[in-house]
Length: 242
Image 1: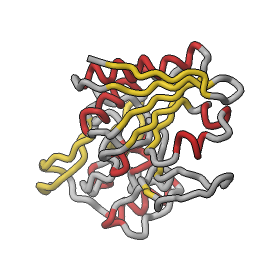
Image 2: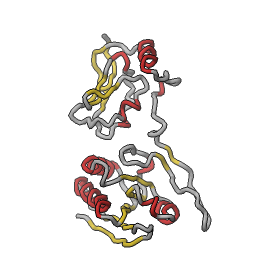
Image 3: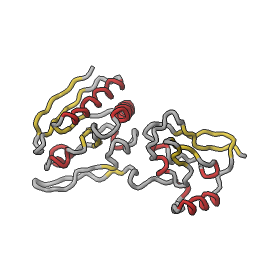
Image 4: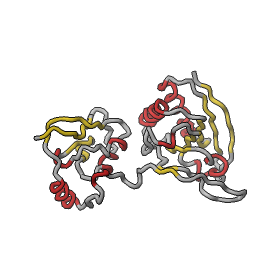
């Protein structure tokens, strides 16, 4: 036994999303009965690469007496799980699909269909609360059907904005509200715009944002944009919050 850093998981906060499982290069975390659990101290290097992928802030690193990290045992474990041994273990591992990236500024001439997406990821479940592209951003929160319905979405709405997408009907509304509250508490925005379809369920995105703003305690207003089923801007209004 040695005194060292090791991951600690708060099962009360864990919602079983599994993002930490994917982010752990050593296979030290598994979902058991719907909760993330550290299956072996010897598999955990204590670097905490999984922390930034937990949307519930359920993972921390603590220093305590525990078994030493054993690379040989990790390699055997990964081979038994048929997972690759990370080539640069000391730097930790980030699932490529969740790794934050920012792209260069894009200028498009009239009629150009160049993508105006300036960062990755975009899904609310995957975006880190402290993602660099959220700092002092013009934030566009959009229902995920909008870009499919609206042909000029990139040039008309997305250009110059950081974007987060989600579905207020099919996804967990309580999770969305809590995650947005955390994002609002951790960042200041130049502007906030919410875009949704005209169907009733999609207006839930507006209510989620209103509740998140109320939870954050900030006095924010935002532009609420309704898109018709044929992809036109049907209504735009400024919603004030106290």
